[in-house]
Amino acid sequence: MEQRGPWTRHSGTTPFHTPRFQVHHDQVTGPDGRPGDYDWVQAPDQVRVAALVDGGLLIVEQHHYLGGAMWQLPGGAVDPGDADPLAAARRELAEETGYHGGTWTGHGSLLPLPGLTDCSVHLWRVERPTPGPAAPESSEADLRVLRVPLPEAAAAVREGLLRCAPSAALVLLIVEP
Amino acid sequence: MEQRGPWTRHSGTTPFHTPRFQVHHDQVTGPDGRPGDYDWVQAPDQVRVAALVDGGLLIVEQHHYLGGAMWQLPGGAVDPGDADPLAAARRELAEETGYHGGTWTGHGSLLPLPGLTDCSVHLWRVERPTPGPAAPESSEADLRVLRVPLPEAAAAVREGLLRCAPSAALVLLIVEP
Image 1 (cartoon, chains in turn cyan, blue):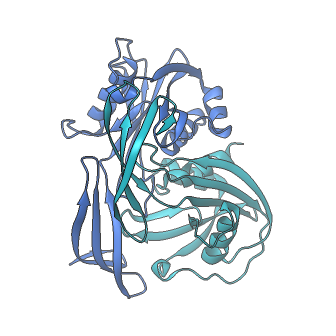
Image 2: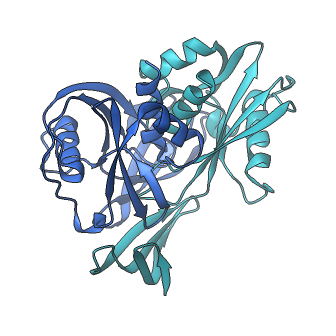
């Protein structure tokens, strides 16, 4: 039994899993004192990076299988081989854009869907990274890297071109310090 | 067969479902031309509302089962009984805070986890809503409603108190117009 604020977790099973996520089914007592079930999705944490290069922000443009064409900040899932979220952020930035090194600052983490999944997205800013060759994953064969002035990146959030929620929040955090 | 930009969806099954979401397993050809699987979670769209009352923003504070204690904008899932996302936004605001009516403006929608789920979060701003009695769901028995000055709400994003990604993006959109 585990207490989580006003929630109690009594027990749980993992009735389904895929290579990318697990589905959990927990027996709980809710904040109102009533027993119930809580189904949720366990997925790896992610990272998003605001990379500042020559006064612009690096943006990746690709067509998502589920969400269609969109702008997003470089990033992806924290892999088992990553020592920590910062290592994942450095790896993803280098794979997707070729940029590496530079001065890194953490901007905390956000929960994309706090009722559905425990997945956190860790946010980073990097200044003056060094260019190099990119090595995108095979599922990212259509990925294009743009360098966008900060006001244009903020406008892309407002206009619905940059629709990834953690990316949108980080762009707005960076643009209005 | 369905073409989605550089992706092709050949077929799909729904190997698992819960009352809250379904797991899909699709056969696809990816942007690199290679065949593969794509596992994803179908969950109802959500809404978040920036409600401006006497120069402050309504914030709900509650302890999430998965994410712990946090601030969030009022909102929740679009229910089958909601005519559209705006109806869901009006219903959720009234249930959680008692506020209703006012002047509503759409701020588009965001994808919280575009690689994992098709769930969109629709964003709204409402000005000058009218107070009334709240009627939170039983799982929200610990929900507290705060009225927070806009700069304090933006600071709560920066300091990690307001950790819901779509809420954070909408707060920053509202604070810096």
